[in-house]
Amino acid sequence: MPPTPNQRLERSRRMLLDALNESFPATRQELSRRTGLAPSTVAGIVRGLLAEGLVQERESADHEGRGRPSSRLSPSRPPGHLVGIDFGHTHISAALATTGLEIVAEDSVPLDVDASAGNALDQAAILVSALLERAGVPSGSVRRTAAGIPGPINQATGRIQSATILAGWAGISPREELAGRLGGEVAIANDAELAALAEHTHGAGQNVSDLIYVKASHGIGAGLILAGRRYTGAYGASGEIGHTLVQEGGNQCRCGQRGCLESVVSIGEVWRQLVAAGLPEAERPADLSLSALIGHPVVARIVADAGRTLGRVLSDLCNALDPAMLVIGGELASAGDPLLEGVRESLRRFAQPAISDRVQVRASVLGPRAALVGALTLAAAAAAP
Ligand SMILES: [Zn+2]
Image (cartoon, protein in one colour):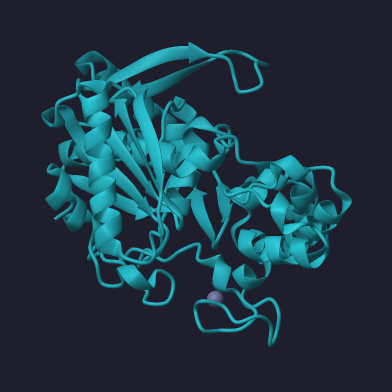
């Protein structure tokens, strides 16, 4: 039986609210593009949502401060707090924020997260309790927690599905484990996907609907925003570009293959090459950040090489998806221009001209905090009406 006009309107309304909750502020045109609804339908639904107080409207100039101010919509926020957690390979970060995404408390602890999922989850719970206590916020005020995990998550079961990428976590459901430790409802996503969401909502990619965020760190992963929405793939394993073969018979990778992208350009491998090229081991900072060494000729050359190798893999991805922007993040991105220039050089060589002429390559604006900000953004979306 075909849906009645009322059912159709209700479905469109839900679709529009979901699209807005996932990524805001947004203009009416953006919402029309993301949902596929006609502009007149979007205008009618938004009028109703504004009248009900479920959505707020604000005038704002565009990102560069040029042009006519546009009217941007955001979901209205209920009272209470949100918790975001980012599990990296070598640290856990957590933040407590209001539902309007103002951060109240934030902290981080170094930890080998891959070694033991149980220990990492326990440490995350301790970190969150400490933040609540420091801010004087009762745990009952937390409306939703969201966490980023550096591995593929099966969307249907919520379990970590790869024994090779995050071995200590295989088969575990971080959502259930964290809910058991913290109480309340928990949302989980891959960390590169969360970073992509954060850069799209609050960072470098606010004015584009299609972007690829690349986390170039101890591993290499990508998060996709397509048509304004987070894209996870059918089974939650989209964007695992780190295990693309780039060097036949190359270095052994932690996945068991040889010559994977991340065995050539991960931050650890780049540091190994720098030390082999004569850079004193003593200059290596604990967080492996390259920012202190910008301008060093050996660093510039090795990092540009890494950028070119990364760009070779990204060219194929760009040919397939035609994104408006590539946002490069993770510790490797702290090397700045030489890395981005290496990526651009490969795009010019290997991507179709129609794509390489237009795609913007930018450094992450949110830096090491991108996944954490994305976790809070996801928590806000999940807690919304
Ligand atoms: Zn691999």
